[in-house]
Image (spheres, rainbow, N blue to C red):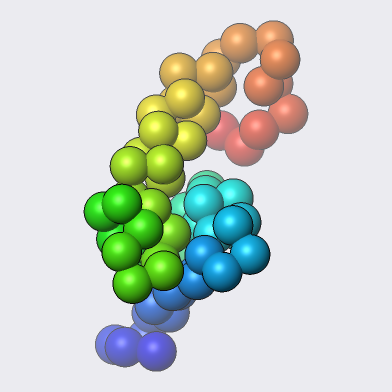
Length: 70
């Protein structure tokens, strides 16, 4: 914990760090997420997390994602 915020560092040993990091990023918490390009050092891959967040933003208004938070 730094300056009252949580720094979340999901590791990718079980190949689910991107899913965990994306859920954390989409929550309403004031948090930081540690990622790495190409999953170096076994953190969540930055490029995968950016892709998930980009797709989520594009689908927010569409029927199949209407249950997501706005």
